[in-house]
Length: 303
Image 1 (cartoon, one colour):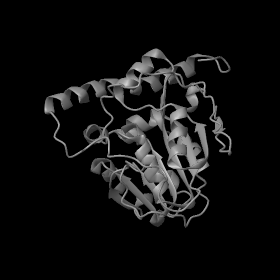
Image 2: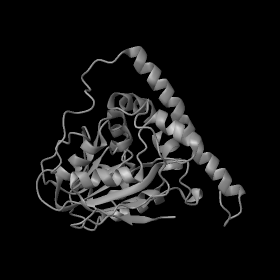
Image 3: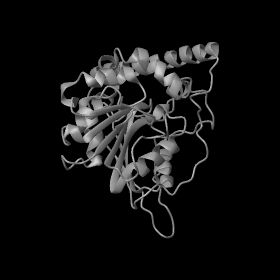
Image 4: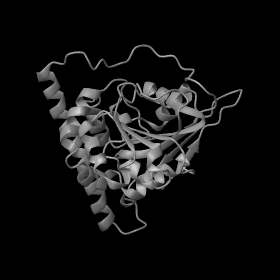
């Protein structure tokens, strides 16, 4: 089930959708694999099997095309940046509509980008290493900003979305695709242990604070989930917003949350990495469980 919610800004008030799938959660969680250094090493190993193990359960071609539809990739000459583009799976959906020479793939993981470079349809794309919270693009640069499966590892999501606003041209559109916070208690536990699973309301708030207008959110998921979101989805929603004015975002922020140059205790890092990987295993098993339920439970009955 794909539901679209929109927020309209009026002089009197901001109307925010009441989303039934979001659950309350503590203000602070451990999130053992969230920040940039942890994500770097996580994908150092995961990149080997990412396209063959993670994508089939959480990020299918049908989901990708559905999630990109609100981005309005309507002109082959558009300038598009794919932030956190990884192995280029999302970029393959972008270049169906936009010439590859006009697309830039940015990611902090050279191991993921090495996979993208091997894909023939992406050979004309610009492929660069970079930070989603400090983009190496000039202000008012791109027609479209796309980011899929990256926000989970941003220490400061608001800063990343502020950067999306900055690099877009007047009237440009940002499309951010990411996870949804679970309502099922066990899934909530593992989501909190693993990485950032934002609530739908948080996505909307981040976009609005950055300055975006016409903010909309669309739920996505594998077809064998039958619209069920209670376990949380690594790719669970597509959020879009339009840049209403040229220049930088009106939002002012302080220093970055994470200093990647700061030394990390190796034992603490290893402890966090192992616990995060255990939690990630749960989310590898969830789509298998849902696929089996889809095969067993008769169509039309809830799963």
